[in-house]
Image (cartoon, rainbow, N blue to C red; front, side):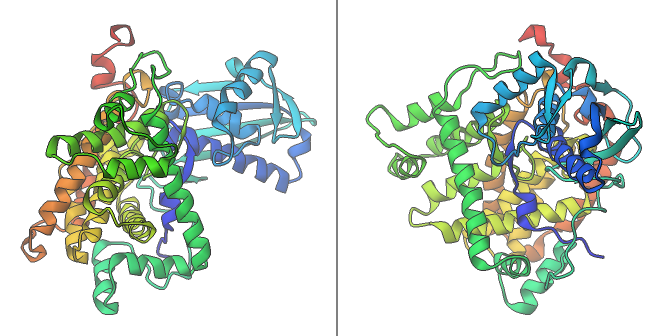
Amino acid sequence: MMESISIFDMLKIGIGPSSSHTLGPWRAAERWIAELRSASLFDEVVGIKVHMYGSLSLTGKGHATDYAVMLGLSGTDPVEIPVKDIHALVTKIQKTHILNFGNGLPVPFNPDSDILFHKKFLEFHANGLQFEATLKSGKTKKNTYYSIGGGFVVVKERKNAKRNIATFDSFPFPIQKGTELLAYCEKENKSISEIVLENERSLRTDPEINEKLHHVWDTMLECMYIGCHTQGKLPGGLNVTRRAYDLNKNLLGDSSTYDSPQTWLTTIRNTEVKFRQILKWVSCFALAVNEVNASLGRVVTAPTNGSAGVIPAVLMYYLVIENHEAGFEEIKKFLFVAGEIGSIFKKGATISAAMGGCQAEIGVSSAMAAGALTELLGGTPDQVLMAAEIAMEHHLGLTCDPIGGLVQIPCIERNSMGAIKAINAAELALGSDPKDAKVPLDKVVETMWNTAKDMSSKYKETSEGGLAIGINMSDC
C-alpha cells in the first residue's frame, strides 16, 4: 500500500521542545493508556516504569522527555493543555510521588527511579521507549514504541521510517515521489496546492479542512507573537538570552501600538522595507518560534519542533513583505504545498534528526518553505520542486549536535538560517528554467537518506559529537 500522509500529520500542534523527544513520547503514553483500556487492564495497574533508549536517553533530559511522559501518562493532551499548567503538574508528581494515571487512577510514581535512561539503541529506531505496568496480579505488561520524528509514533519501524504509519486508501492522487506529483499536476492541469486539496477532501469536508488550517496558522502566529514579546533567559542551564523581543522592538520602534497577533502583523506591514530589515524580520520570526519551543511552549511541527520556526517565518515574510493583500487563501496554499513536500521527504528518507541529523529537520523545513513560497510567488509546479531541491541541496550533511541536549544551540539560530535559505532558493528557482536543472527533487531526497546512513551516530541527536562536546555546559 502506498503511504499517504495528510498535511495535518506533517503540521501537528504540540508542546516543545522536540517533536521526536517530547511530542512523540507524550503521544506514545496516550496510546499506551488507550491500549490498556482496550485490553481491560487499565484499572489493574499498580505501578509504572518508563524505559528510554538510544537518542531518547542520551538527550532526553535536555528535550524534556521525562516531562513529556509524565504529562502523557497523566492524561493531558499537548494540543489543549494550558502551557502555564505544565510545570505545576510535573512538580506535583515529583513532590508527591503519585501520578494520576490517565487522569483517573492514582499510581505510585517516582520520576527519579521509575523513568530509566538506557544508552542502548533498540534495533528498529534510535528513539525507542518502553512502558512497563505492574498489575494487581503481580504480572507485568510491557509495550514498546518508537518516536520516528515529527510526532509520529509506531510500534515497530523499519530503519528508513517508511512503514507502519497511518495510511489512507482513499487518496485520489497517491504520491510517493516528486515525479508522481508533477505528473498529476500536468495531467489534471492543477497546481500542487490544488492536488493536495483534492487529497485532503478525501478525508475531510472543506469546512473541516479550513477550520484545522486556521488552527494551525493561528498557533503559528500566536507563537511568533509570544516569542517577540517575551524577555529573559531560556530554561535548561545554558542561560541563552531571548533575542526576538529586542529585534521586534527595534524594528517597530517605540511609537507602534497594537493589541493582538493580527494587529501586530498589520503594524509590521507598515514598517520600512530594506534588505537588512527584511533579514532581521525573517530572523526575528524564526527565533521567536524556537525560543517559545525551547521553553515548553506550544508550536506547530513543521515538520518537527526543532525546525518549527522556518515555515512560519517564511510565510510571515510573504504576508508582511511580498503581498500585503494576502489572507487565508494564500496561507492555505502555502501550508498545502509545504506539507506535501515534507511528506515526500518523510516517505523517501526521514524527518528524524536521530536518524538523519539536522538535514532531516532544518533541511526538510527549508525545502518545504522554499517550495511553498515559490507557488505563492507564481512559480510552476516544476519550479516549486526545484526550489525545494535547491534548499535541501545546501543543507545536505547538516549534523544534529545540541549542546547539553537542549533544543537551543545551535538549533534556534539554524531556523533563521533555514528560513533565509528557503527564500533564496525560491528566488533562484523562479529565475530558472526547470528543464535545465541537473538535480531533481527525488534524487536529493535519495541523497539525503544515503548521507544519513553514512553519518556517524554521534552527529545524530546524541550530544556525543560536534558542538555538543566542543562546548561544555560550564562554558556557557
